[in-house]
Length: 403
Ligand code: MG
Image (cartoon, rainbow, N blue to C red):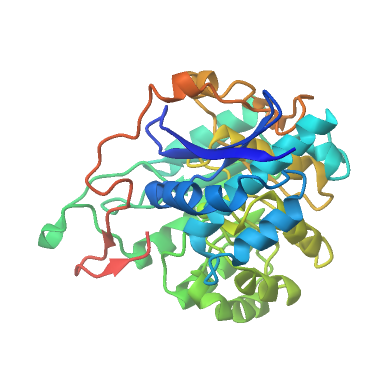
C-alpha cells in the first residue's frame, strides 16, 4: 500500500479557519484525516503540506508512521515551529486514522485501549461581573460539569477570555486597552465568591494567558491558593519559564502550561523538574499524535497530567485525536471542550459527542470522524485583511503586549 495523495481542506463553518489534511492511499476508499489548524497562519500550513510534504510522502507506505514522522521532520533541516509542526502533525494524525481503519479499531485501541469510559470536560464560564460568571458556572454545574474555567471582564479593559465591558479608549488605541494590575486585584475576589457560593464539589480553573508581568503572576497564584483551583493556566509566557522555580516555592496552586509550546526543549525541562502539573499542548502544534503520546508517557512518570488544548480553533478531527489520548492515557487530567455548532457537525460526520460534561468515544475505526468535502467547500475562510492574524493588544500607553 502506498500514499497516493496528500492535500489540505480549508473550511470555516463557524467562521474559524480550520485546516484538515487528507492522506489518500492507492487502496480505493482508504484515506485518513488529520487536523493541521493554525488559525492565525493557515495558508502557511497549506503551503507546507502541499508544496513540501506531499512530494516527500507520495509513494511512501502509510503504515510506517514513525519513519514518516522522523524523516519528514528533518527533511527541512531547520525544523519545528508551529507551521511545520502543524503540517506534519496533520499528516501524522491522518496516518494513525488510516492505521485504525486498516485494523478495524478506534485509535485508542492501538494506544493500549481505554482506561476510562469518557473524557471529563471543562466548560467556559464568562461574564461582565462576578454575578454573571457565578450564574454561568452554576448553570454548568447543574448540567453535570464537574470542571468550569472562569474568566471575568475587567471593566474598561479588553480582558482575555471574557465578555468585554467597553470603557474609555485613551490615546485612540482603536481597541480596549489592557492593564495587569486591575486584573490581578479582581481575580482573587472572583474566586473567593465562586468558592463560597458554589461549594467544594466543582473544580474551578482559570487562564492568565501570559498577560501579566511574571512577579505579579507569582503573587496571583499565591493569593488564589485558599480557593483550591484545579489549575491556573499559563501564568508565564514560554519565554519566562525560569520563573516556575520561584512560583513552586511560594504556592501549591496547581499549574497548567503549554498551549504555546512547539518544541520538546520547551516542555521537557518543566516536566523533568516537576514545575508544572498539567501539560496543555495543542497536539498538532507539537507534531501530532506520535509526539503527543510520547509526551503523555513522559508526563506520567513525573506526576504531570494531560489537559490537551481543545478550543474552537481545532477541528473536530483534532478533538477526536485529543479524545483518543484522553481515553488511553492513565495520567489524563481534564479535557477542554468546544461545543461545535450544527453546521460544523454536518461538515464533520462523527464529530465527538458531548453529554453530561463528558466527551464520549464512538466505536468507529480510526479517529472516528469524517469530512464532507463538498459541504466543507461551502464555508470558505472569511475575508480578513490579516488572513486570520490577531490584532495587537496594548496597554494604556500604547505598549503592545502578548495576546
Ligand atoms: Mg489557554
